[in-house]
Amino acid sequence: MQLRTPRDRNGTFEPQLVAKGQRRLDGFDEKILTLYAKGMTTRDIQDLVQELYGVEVSPTLVSEITADLDAEATAWRTRRLDGVWPIVYLDGIVVHMRGDNGRVSPHTMYVAIGVNLQGHKELLGLWLSETEGAQFWLSCRTDLKSRGVSDIFVVCVDGRSGFPEAIRAAFPHTKVQLCIVHLVRAALKYVMDKDSREVAADLKTIYQSATVLEAEEALKKFATKWDVKYPTIAKQWRLKWTDIITPFEFPAPIRKAIYTTNAIESVNRVIRKFTRNRKQYPNAESALKLVYLAIHEASKKWIMPTAGWKAALNHFAIVFEGRMPTG
Image (spheres, rainbow, N blue to C red):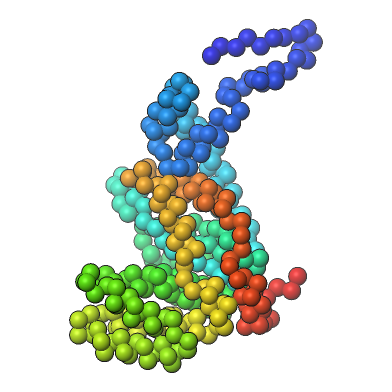
């Protein structure tokens, strides 16, 4: 649309609806970004804008609008963080990305979500890697430390190789707990459908025990009942037992707060929802940018603190006496 802007002799006239030099209406870029954040591809955005507004949007225009996110996402990923975090959840989600060799291969997007002293969730970091080598874990923990994180009370992880060891190397006084949801899910992979409900119920008696001794007794009973049919399950739980029983060291309010990584599972669902239309990503920047948008959208709902947080915080102050900030 061609516009002829009125002009006066002194050049003081300022248009109100369409400013001088403006090429797009106010809010148009935000609408494009919202569609992009919802997981729509460039072609989807073109078709929708054409249908709603009768305007043809070129792929170049969409790229120009989303390109501004690169600096914003980089600034967000490198921002300073609080020094002390009572709870941190770590998890990974697989995305398919074109690598430097030109081939598309699965990469893992690692997500770290912290619960601050006020009980609110906050995404701490995103890291993309094709492998889980020691060098990668070193870079993750170095990133958190360089951005200000000095102490974490409890870390909940999904059991991926290297997670617990990497945490203990960076934060030796941090308690590590394996996510019960992931443990049960991994166990049920070995179970036939007809037995899955009963096996899950028997596993529940283990992790919902009142004490460690009670949990150990429940694990023995589980092994006696199921080892003949599914010997792998009890064996895996025994191998990871030290990190499974971490919640039993804490009183009920803390145990309830760290019980599972449901907090990060909900974030992963948001990421999957926004990325399901994209079968692959051309590069790491594209994948990180879209996940950043997904998290930005999800965080709009993070307005309430964790349920029962005040009670948990009081017990954190007692259990981790001397490490809780006083200011």
